[in-house]
Image (cartoon, one colour):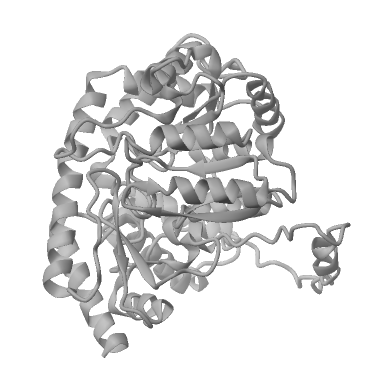
Length: 478
């Protein structure tokens, strides 16, 4: 039983027994619960914390947990219907609606129900995360002099230097800002580069989280199709001409969701087209550190070919470590750097210093390179296991491209398939998959699914997950 299901089971048991205790009566000690329910101390602590959050128990440091006083009759809820008008009033007839659909992001963040195989995760399974190395790094960081003091708003100089070396080319530490992960960096970049109501060019399909950022900022995402070699330059140029956009957001390496890599022939075209349009290219280099063992030499970031300040580069350590190690880099050249810095300071002040110090400890330890080598092997094996199982059990699902980096495969369903029905049937069968619709900023050309192979326990679970998906497709496809 995993930790989440153990906590849920214990919470359910404790709720059923609360009536045995008087108000303000003391519950058994944590040690007694560990022995009685045969769970870990961590499970007991999390279950009590959940009950406390629900107002059912009160935890008192040094004394234990007590049954809480039931809440008095709650007042009637207020009338919040006025907010529908307030949130819809844009103040101008041509304003872009700012309603935010976060479903495409939440599908990769929500914890699955017990027993559900997670093919929709955006992060490494806990068995692939460098948990021991991160814990040791955090412990060492906490002992550093000044570890809990206020850091420079741009980030620790050593960490900025580390990010600059990782990007390479002409990028210097002075041109790097440390951010609270890639999502935060993308939010800052779009706010800095485009005013509300402006168009922003995006790859099609693309990362739903970026579409949500754009729409929350009042921007209008305009799709530019990609193929196996990345974005198509002739369509990119046409989109700039048609819209007058000042920003193009792309993922040149192992694009999400297609896994495509921008070809060497197209790289200079993308930079030239953007430069001629007087526009910025936001390069989301999100999985460079999740390369598979069988990959050849990786192309350098677009930022290394740019000396005119066209590229605003975003990178992060989160995908290669843990969802909670939210540390990234944002690099830019020229006056735009000051605007990026100002927006980040206003929004978040700075990334907490202990997290930056722990990151430095992690990437500076021998465990870091060992972790990356281990993940490269594991991801290759899981990718191959998923591709082989799909070809064997679900040959009607087209798999046009198998990437050598990243953590997912992009599948095309047969024309006319209701992808929402497939996703729902899959969940009923015990496997969570991501629908393709949220990856498109306009009407999709075909139904798709995205399957992650990084968030599962191993190759055996991959085989079982595909078997369940086969069962689901049989109920929908016939």
